[in-house]
Amino acid sequence: MASSLQGFDSAATNATMAVSNASEAVAKKMTQMDDLIKQLEDPKANTAAVQARLQKLNMEISMITNVMNSIKDLMKAFFQR
Image (cartoon, rainbow, N blue to C red; front, side, top):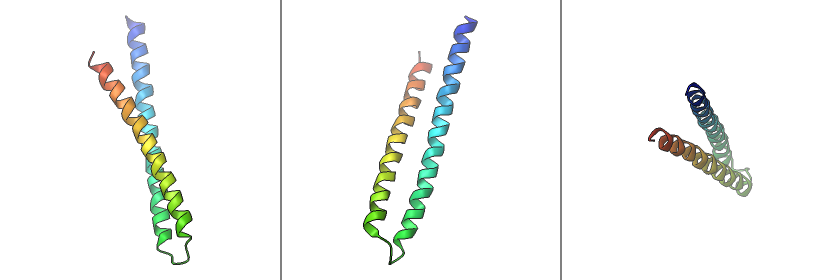
């Protein structure tokens, strides 16, 4: 019984760390997006290139958020057992 609780604790800790790391990654990408948006204010900026990078960051944020939500959903389902 004790080893099964240790396994559960380890899985919960790993899931929590994964969500935390994903949150940090999203925060960093949001900062990058803010920097890119500021670049768009420069009339000499290559607007198409900046917009392409913004789209790429948006996709990355969306993917990370989806993974983070999936982990949260799995943990909820596990705790409801």
